[in-house]
Length: 98
Image 1 (tube, helix red, strand yellow):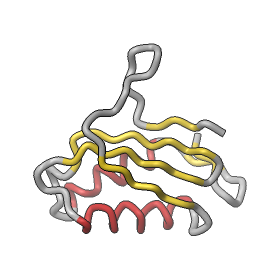
Image 2: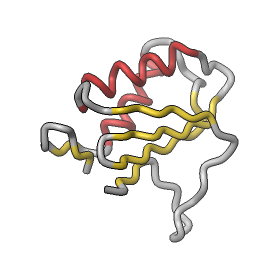
Image 3: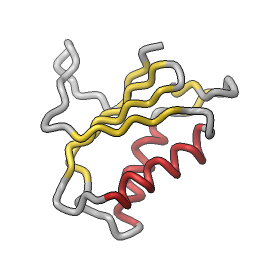
């Protein structure tokens, strides 16, 4: 679960739906893979970009996260070449560290 600054919990699938919405607004093929790591109220987002990646993608993700989780969060978007698998061998799209 995602822990919001106001203490409420939300499903980790809010991230999946926000990324999926990119297709609906004409930004399909913008992200190959992603992973979100929550550490208190810092959300680090690792992104492997696709051919249609642009600033508009980042702006949309930030806007939607503020709407869903609240404005009292920090968002750190990082473009990466690969996203490491978990020790279990799985590639999880969300991980909460704190």
